[in-house]
Length: 116
Length: 117
Image (cartoon, rainbow over all chains, first blue to last red; front, top):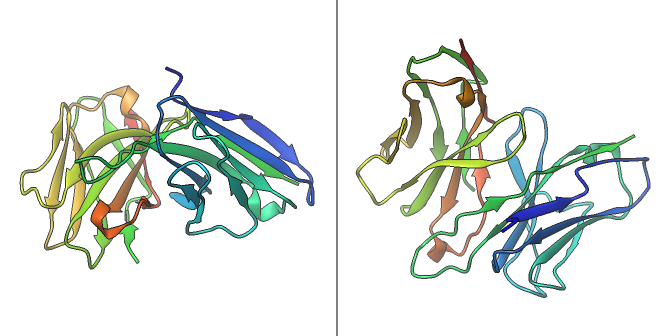
């Protein structure tokens, strides 16, 4: 079980370039999330998905798009990168809410993105 | 909206000693969950301990325990017998009960803990 993996681990972009971050999980989890972590800040939710084909906005969605075409993958896209998007990006997944009342989130190792 | 406040940006502790990290939160919810996550230099987010708001008993996981004061909206983490491997950023986080329809973790800004040999 690889858990949650993220590709790439590091990336440097120029302002205006586009890129896609890939998150994959092999735990058959329904829910997936994208967070960003900036210096001196905790993680903030960008977008999330509660199942294949669904997406929803989180706390800081502007400048990002997401897609969940396959249950195991959650893609985060930057159409026109800006220096303000320099950050560490974390993906997480969690199982379907069962009889328990919360869903523990399992995190990937993060992607460090620098936009020049 | 929920907010989570960690008032100690940095702390240090001698190896084998005990340290307490503070966390306060603000919410109008009655049922919710609180978490402490550890982020070592590797960047990996690791769940340390979880507390369910409806449980009065404080959660304990080996050397880690919490002091949950619901009325005061306080959720501190105590690390006993500190080890060098405890050196990390520690984040306090809040999640509404699932029946509230929220899936979001709200994080504090973190406390950087250094364990000194």
